[in-house]
Image (cartoon, rainbow, N blue to C red; front, top):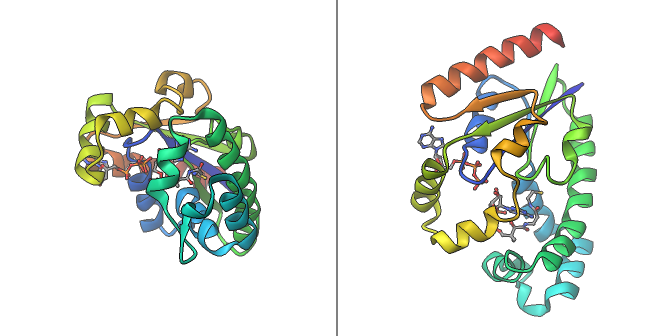
Length: 194
Ligand SMILES: CC(C)(COP(=O)(O)OP(=O)(O)OC[C@H]1O[C@@H](n2cnc3c(N)ncnc32)[C@H](O)[C@@H]1O)[C@@H](O)C(=O)NCCC(=O)NCCS
Ligand SMILES: Nc1ncnc2c1ncn2[C@@H]1O[C@H](COP(=O)(O)OP(=O)(O)OP(=O)(O)O)[C@@H](O)[C@H]1O
């Protein structure tokens, strides 16, 4: 089964694009969401995170995401340590999930697909982009986050220009109906080449 990697910077609209593939009946694995599940349900992951950040990282076995975010996005080393706990667990979980799917291809959506090399395991990679001003506007509206919080995360992500060099397909997500049409077109091409 082929794997289409799907990525994009914060606020580009990659999860929105993932939703369009779902509408077309394609199984979609959202690494962010699965990482959240694993942080909560996987004992080893939970224990490693507590060892790294202390007991404050969890309340009643539920991760305190705000606390963890406040510790990692200003500290590259801590973020790398957190990544090295979560990413291998997500990779294993994805391989297991993929085996359960029956489809010409599946979508693997991850925020830092290029940065962390996950793209190498995908057959094709789709990059979703949007102008920075547009991304900031969407994130402020969606998360009510401050510019500092957004910039602190973006600092750990590559620029769109850098990512473009590794992408097989690019969707500039500005107008949603155009984006949806581009997803349908790509879907048809992938079915024909699968
Ligand atoms: C630090 C955490 C707890 C903050 O949780 P929160 O609910 O605030 O954010 P969420 O996970 O929904 O991520 C929102 C966006 O932040 C950015 N982001 C998240 N993790 C990272 C990271 N490791 N590096 C760069 N950007 C990141 C992405 O654009 C992502 O889409 C969480 O992001 C986390 O555990 N990150 C490390 C694991 C990871 O890399 N997850 C992403 C894919 S596996
Ligand atoms: N073309 C668009 N026009 C207007 N709003 C959009 C568009 N695409 C996405 N959005 C909105 O922008 C916000 C960010 O989109 P989405 O969550 O898909 O981005 P993302 O790339 O997955 O972000 P993150 O990495 O932060 O999780 C959402 O609230 C979404 O509904």
